Image (cartoon, rainbow, N blue to C red; front, side):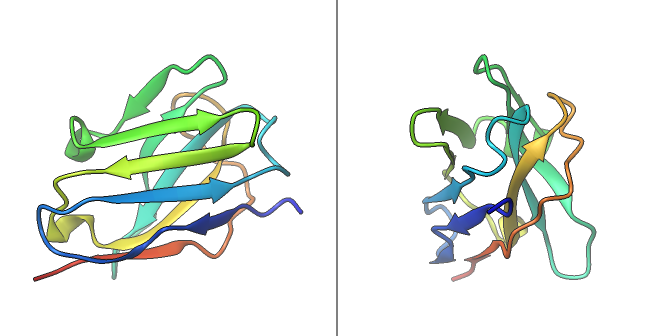
Length: 118
């Protein structure tokens, strides 16, 4: 199966935390792995990316709050999200990326919904 499977989303209050998981055995070896999100009415955007050596790149709005990691033995990618705000609401997707610039391959899964609301 090439499409990744995301999980871990849900409803959380502002200031709360969530950890997203992505099972990506079909695409894990392509290159880097990344998380993207799509807010209502907006285009999908890169959130964070991690390459095979563990180097990471984060978009400015999530720096210092989100942490991307990968378990190479399990072929799983994680996104730890802390101090969430309503602006973090959206559908979160993981995908393989062509490098730390986050340019995605075309292996989109169903995503997992994150809603930050009081």
